Image 1 (tube, rainbow, N blue to C red):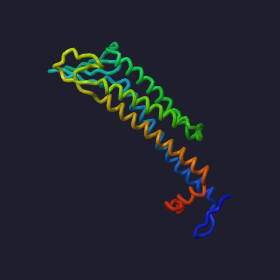
Image 2: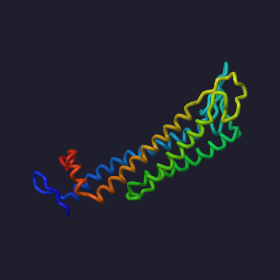
Image 3: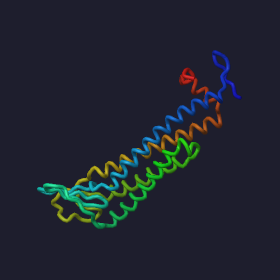
Image 4: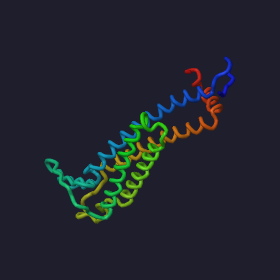
Length: 214
């Protein structure tokens, strides 16, 4: 037992650090799980979306995604399309891996409270998802141009080509998985601080005013 002198006597620092760590750990896990679950929903909507590239015609719009193409005149009609270029093939491949990693990350995050309380796999899975997704969006962004469709010259260069919301939801999903990974990183840092210096950890908790709630 390690004791910390306070104005009212001695306090068991092990009990203080454990209770405080549990409180903060639950909070971090709550945020991490929500970030991860929101991230996979948004990532999947981007993955299947037909709104990655928007071609503006005089009386129509053409939306092109990874898997389908939609045209709107009076009504919106969609159909699957073949691979337009190597850029699209690589983007499909990377987005598929990102989505698989995201599903694994969300599953690990949901299992954290019951089956994986001390595991680092949720941090690893969320971090891998964020890195893979960031690489995917950077690769696609570097190949995007108002005169090109997935690295290929546009059929009609007179028609303006812009990015659509499917790309931005991909960036948002990347941000959410990154935030989830950061939460799990904070949990790991907290565990290390408790393990190596519980007295200093308890002192920091007292200085921040947390002891008043115990």
